[in-house]
Length: 170
Length: 203
Image 1 (cartoon, rainbow over the protein chains, first blue to last red):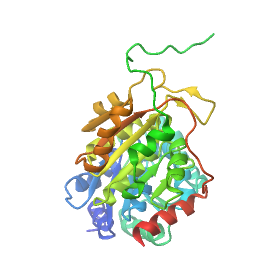
Image 2: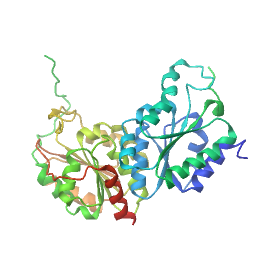
Image 3: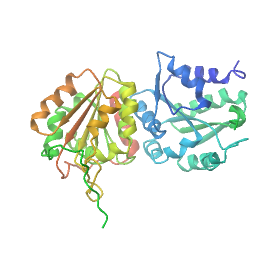
Image 4: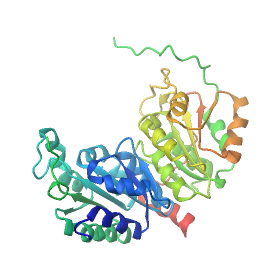
C-alpha cells in the first residue's frame, strides 16, 4: 500500500502526526495531498500566492500551538530564502515537502538552475535536507523529517525526486 | 531628473492623525488580543505600548512575514482575537497574502495597517501608498469582507468596535502623518521572542 499509493499514505502520515495547516502552491507532484486536504474537514487547506507565505504561515501556526506543512515545487524554494531567516532566527520548526524539477530526466531546460540549487540554497539557510527517490522511501523519510522538525525543532525539507514523481513529458 | 508622480486615482484627504496617539487609541487594551507586529515601526510601538508583553510577537526582520504569521496564529487559536499590526511598506511586500487570508476568512483576525505613506526606517522615502496606491481598495478587492479606513479621529470609534465586536475578518487602514512611532529599547533576540510568546500562550 505505502509503496504503490505513497501519496495517500503520505497524507495519512501527516495527519496522524497532527499536522493541520497545509500551505501550498499548486503543483502536480502534490496533487493528492492538496486534494485530500481540501476534502478534510479537520485540516486547513491553504492555497498560497507565493511560497514564502508558507514559511510565515508555519511560524504563526507554531506560535499558536499547531503544526503546518509547506508543499511546493523546487522552483518556489528561491522565493522563500529571506523568510527562512525568520525560521532560523526564531528556531521555528518548519516541515516542507518539495517536488523536484530540474532533476532526474528533466526535459525542460528552464527548470535546471533552481532545481539544482535547491539543496545548497536550503542548506545555506540552515534547513536540513532529506531526499526520497523511490516509493518505498517516502513514508520512512517523511516520518524521520516529522520527528526532526517537531520533536527536535529543526527546519527540514524533504525533496521528492523526479525519479519518484516522474519527469514531466514535453 | 527622475521623478515619481503621485497617482491621479487618489482623492483621500491628507493624513492628520499622529500614530503615537492613534495606535493606542485604536487598540486600547492590547492584552485582550494576540498580536503579531510587523517590521519596524509597528513592532516598536506595540512593544512600547505593552512594555514588551509576551502577547505581542514583534518582528525585527523578515519583512513581509507579518500577515501570514497572523493567519497561522488565528487559525491555530480560533477562540482568541488576533491582530496583525503592520506598516504600509511591510504590507506591500506581501499583498498577495491578503488574497490568501481572504480565502481562509478567519473571523477572529483583524489586520491593522498603520499607513504613513513612507518608509520611515530607511530614509523616509515615499511608499507606494504615499504616492496614491490604495491598500483599502486592494484589501476589499482581495475579498476581505470588512474594510474600514480611518482618516480622522471621527473614524476611530468604528475601528475600535470592529476590533472588539466584529464577527468577520477585517482590514483597518489607519492613515497617519509622517513621524516616528513610540519606541522603547526592545528585545531583538528572535528565539527569545518565540519562546516567551509560546510560553505565555501555551504554557
